[in-house]
Image (cartoon, rainbow, N blue to C red; front, side, top):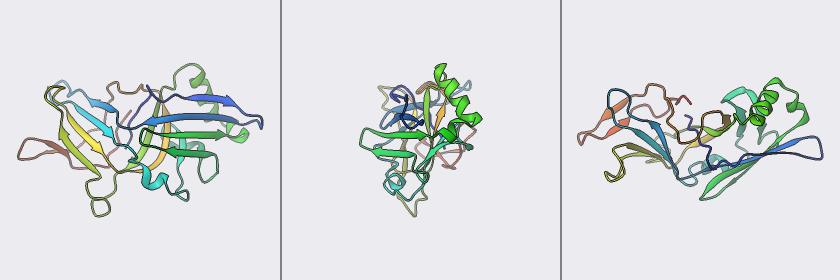
Length: 204
């Protein structure tokens, strides 16, 4: 499951004395992302909020490997905790990171692609790859609610707990409308739409 953010990402790339390059940034919590405007058929808009420290389960466990990738591809790794090239710091405001891109990784084609896109201003988002734990493990890991009528008519999905596996750099800007893969939604008796398959991937 992917969601893209960028306005507060604060990406910074700098050179280090050992020949590596250090990349730092942040994924803000509590911001409302627009996933769909409702489409041409006049459906209800869909939004998502990743709540503070939603990623804590795996982030707080140093033995759980988490990657920095290019475009959600495990074939294009830039750093990881297992390789001791990724440092994560979690707070109520944001998940911040520092990735060490070693000289060896810098020589790969995908790292060069990343540097070129970054220099051109095309890398504009940080997108987490995560899964929602099953209800038997975490009750109410995600909830769905109606938007305040004074603000709009959207369906808002709140993520309270998620298993974070990677952070990726993407080109779609944060909080602009994104395309999503077809998802299955059910209507409750009250008319509230809820997702049937919470593990589907959202296209950026």
